Image (cartoon, rainbow, N blue to C red; front, side, top):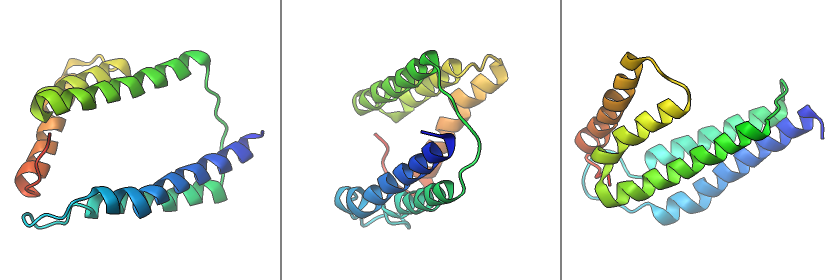
Length: 142
């Protein structure tokens, strides 16, 4: 399969997965709430529709070439496992404990070694997410 065909297939796969989320996952797994100023399905719907549009654009206008080595594929699989472990750990110990650890592990795995960026990623990003979700949107995090 050529690069253009692979890019088209990837774009269509992303659009199809996003459509499945928009049409099935979000309506069936978002509960209504009587608090906060934004409905729980608003942001996921925006993300799903954006992914549909971008996936279709990628399929319609394929560009560039991409190759993945075996080492890179293992790294991607490891990151996926790390995300799964972090989600499981958040359900046990909560967002405020696990998110900084997960952010730090992700940044380290991706090669970041500059301590100011690590500190910002470990504390500022999860803190900002907590502030927006818990305080502004009034939605509970795990």
